[in-house]
Amino acid sequence: MTRPNHSLACPQHKIIDLCLPIRISLIVGLILLPFSHLRWLPNLGTTRPVSSVLFVLSLGLIVLNHIIYSIHKSDFRITTLFSLRYIRLQLQTIPGWQIIVPWIILILMGIISAALTPLYGSFFQALNRLLGYGIIFSTLFCGLFAVKLFGMQKIATWISLGYLPVLFYGIIEAMATRHTIWAVQIVNFLRSWLVVDFPWNYRISFFTTEPSFVGFQLVLLIAVTPYLQSRVLRLTNILIILLAVIFTQSGTVIIEVTAYIVLLIFFNFKVSTRILLVAIGGLISFIAVIWYIFFTQFRVNLDFYRRLSDILRIDRIYAFGVSSSIRGSYFRNLLYTILETHGLGLGIGQYGQFWKGIYLRHFNYQAFDPFGEITRTLASPEYGRPWSVIFGIGVDLGIIGMLVLFGFFYQVWRFIQLPHCRAIFIASIIALMGAYPIVTPHVWLALALLTGVSAGQALEKSIV
Image (cartoon, rainbow, N blue to C red; front, side, top):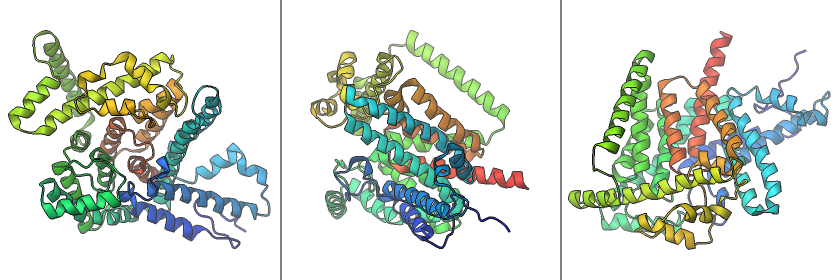
């Protein structure tokens, strides 16, 4: 007699069957991805993205369903449920499970760090950031699990169906950026009552708080578009991407989309051609840097951006220079934080406690803060967040935490092989360096989905 399968892949049993609620919560989470910043939980901080909450719920239901099934096995003992060997055996039933192991380690490190924070910092902020780690883990797990359960074509279809309203709203928002009165009124109404409060400033943001967050959504849309069977949905995604690139005026969005296109072309070349292109690019960059440092009086600073903005009559050019200066100072601030803690990190979630002191020791913010953004931030008691996810982990958990995170990226890179997947991977790294989407699910989900597809295909080939 064949023993029943009791893997995490939605086991069936007669007592309580949670497979249907699991499927529903996963599907709804995928469809609602465009609406992560709606004002539905305005006071719960990192739990605001509705899809993230649904992915956490899905993971909880998956584990509960498995526990119920395992307990009612005649030869099962409750103690085995919590053994590392048993957990690993269950995870191995999901292709690509290796990418979530680093996040298990990061969560364990975060728990230890949070336990120490009452001695010197804020325990509440530690728990808040630890919750963010848990949401990322849930998103990655649910992405892998969904690929195994549904297949990539269905997932791509559900995600794209969720973005259909975004296309229609995006057209209205694009017209509003050109100061069409009725379109501006619609956008102001929706953003006043539905979207988490954030200045709009006549730039396409879709249903996100700010334009740069559109880049995270585009990474996911580009990732799933090749797997769509429907031409209508594929065209919808392309139009959404074009709307964002043309009207958002976000440097982050432009860089991410451009990087994907360039890298897609690059990874389609042979290895020898890639090596030659990298060598030529490196040589040109080296010559340009040497020329810039030693042979020119040209310097890119805020005055240059101001003059260029006046000549071309495009205000966003100057704003881009200011934004680059601000982000650059935040980025260096993270490096100073790691150096000043001797690579140990401030402790999980403690950046908000110490960043002002570190910042003011190293930077004269008044030199590049004409809009008063940093001044308002310094005067605000609100929680300060690291600007980069990668260095944010370093600030939390030090060099060791960063190495564990790099282990995650290495595992993803090891699984994905296609030019499309690798181009998305590097675009995702750019997105994670450009802002701090610790719980915004889009980039994490894109990496998990592509890993799950690649791992599943590799497994099928090995069996054949």
